[in-house]
Length: 253
Image (cartoon, helix red, strand yellow):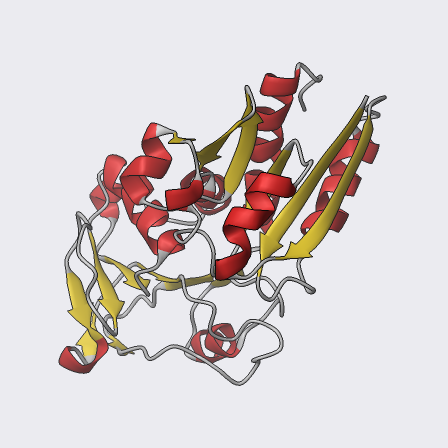
């Protein structure tokens, strides 16, 4: 059998997903004919893409994670809760949206974040789909935090606060959830307050290209432990493959 998969977004040419899935399939010696590619899809092209594609499933990246939702047939409870989709499965010829952002983030970050009981505030930069998924996951684990953003969207269990209204903060971790600093916009970086306290926060940037963004360089220069989103991408990919393989009855990782 031939099974086709892809990642869609705009821009998409620098995505690591095609290489990553090829490595996963090669390392696990799957006998099925599996292919994966990156496809540029603009917002207005989503309906035509879903109607005409022969893919068995696909991943979704910025800026389509929230925009694609109205065009899908169904959402899993997590995807519905966080209002963001990064994995889509074709099931009974219908499109079902999943979200693996929270899972991937936690698998990457759990060995770096302090226990909730020992943690001061977690600070999230940005309030898009990825931020919503991560806040949802951390909230279920009893972490507390704050979301710094330009424009409040609502629907978060943690308070949203504008960048302009806070200049100093004490936190155990700061998680950069925007696309700022992603290739090719290497000079971009989110606004951030002055970090108070003797122990500096761990700084996590979900961006993985470049491996060290301007934000991470800045935080490292202030004495912070830093971490990019490379491992998160791997964990997300493996979870996405589990969803696809389950529907298609293909051996899982």
